[in-house]
Length: 485
Ligand SMILES: *Cc1c(COP(=O)(O)O)cnc(C)c1O
Image: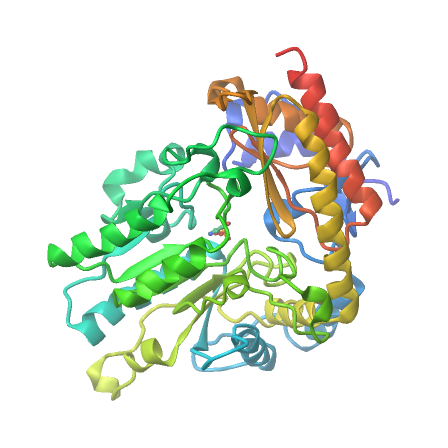
């Protein structure tokens, strides 16, 4: 290890003096010694003191194949020798156009016509959603002759932090303060089986989705939303959803079949379906059923595909470059695209874009990442890791403070509660999730909670042994922090 050029103290001081961290209470931040990460290899991150940590959070849900992957590094070096950035306004570049082709291929369903044909690039998940919102709005005006789009999204939805994305978001803690800045949208109950008022099942030591007793009231509520809006002559024109798993809401996993039903209702009501796959895309939600029998290179990479759903928009970001660079894409249909075609003087152009749109470095990383995802080695690795994840997580039910364990593929949320028999939550102010994650850090495992939900989202290169260490660290940390409760 080469010696750091500046002392740790001076790096910390500079950070405290000038950097404002995201989603961070800076008064707390300034009281604690920050972890300065200097190096990454596979699932391991190293700090400036030479201490090693497992990246159980995939660096805020972005990393897929591990840090410092040779194939992505090579692709980036190769592209750097050509050019780092050129504009997509009036020009194009090969990596961005090839990546668009590959994303369209990824979004092709196994059956039926391939609806998603066009790719609009931007830089992050929020902007990918902004693009979908604007396009859906214009589609409502141009194709349906309506004054405006009307959006429906799920309770607890998180689609990013830009103003449009916040408008369809429903996390009061994050979004409440900005309500006056937002346009009105509607929300519907999310299928949160563990805390569903319609779930009549008693808490058990099992995933609430499996033990639930209900009559799919969440689906009836969704149908009602559409019919009532139509009756009031204010039809919902687009429904946005994080398929299979709502991320920032607290890793809320949908019961099997919910997505397919929700998509059918959306279609039946003539609305567009926006799938926010910013977190769920690129294989995060697992290999799907009968994965072992599938031809190499054909495992589904979108959560929507696991329930045979083909949306009108797919927003991609976090994992798009394998977790290397900020790049995003909004996929949409020829039907939406064609609304923007015309003579120049018709001014139907989509007047929207970003300076770094279609960045060739990001696209090169994205292409290399997709190639890795389709390799037999990665597919096998994901199959093995998913099975190991499932069995490791089972061991958490022995902790009395674990209320629910929600896993979809290679992402899981572990909800901590004061009393599992009553599902009594910890008050947010007790910082339960934060304290458990701090204890995990002392055990060499990095992750970040959402309220009282601890997130485990390992990079795909994580070995079964490393995975065991992540789950052990969580279990031991729960015992340490909450054992006396
Ligand atoms: C992270 C996330 C976003 C926002 O992405 P950014 O790149 O942070 O802007 C949007 N939707 C979902 C589902 C996300 O998880």
